[in-house]
Length: 201
Image (cartoon, rainbow, N blue to C red):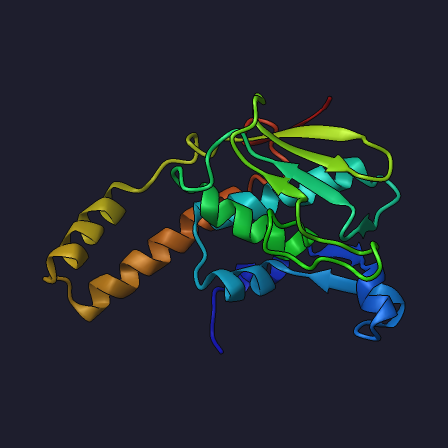
């Protein structure tokens, strides 16, 4: 499996998942989710998927300063509707990492380890909010990649691809330019507060 090398340079997210420990899935419930894992689930790497990963990484870091996030104990609230814009894509990435779902997730074992009803939409909030269910500590996360500009050539190539007139070389060039912008967001600006901000509520 070949993919851009920078995928492997992005910090992973460390989690402790009590459910997986009980069910013998991961020893001590310890697991690690990488950006590569997330894009395997998403099927692609783009500014939306990378932004969802970036927001989750920094939100969990703020909520769990001890270093390891408790999977299944994280509530996520969106101000947007699930079908609005890229909200569905973002929610899928966050659900994959945190285990939080709206109504479709695991219902628990004797009232414990439930994953459903930990994600909601259409909330009266300024931004995306993550909350620890054990402490009720919350953070709002703001992501804005607009300062990372799209190369003009990329738009020209996309037009050719959509029209069916692009050569194989042009298609490859488009993919390289597309991933270059993802790299500029996710690697070059991983901690840039102009791109990603976390505010304790």
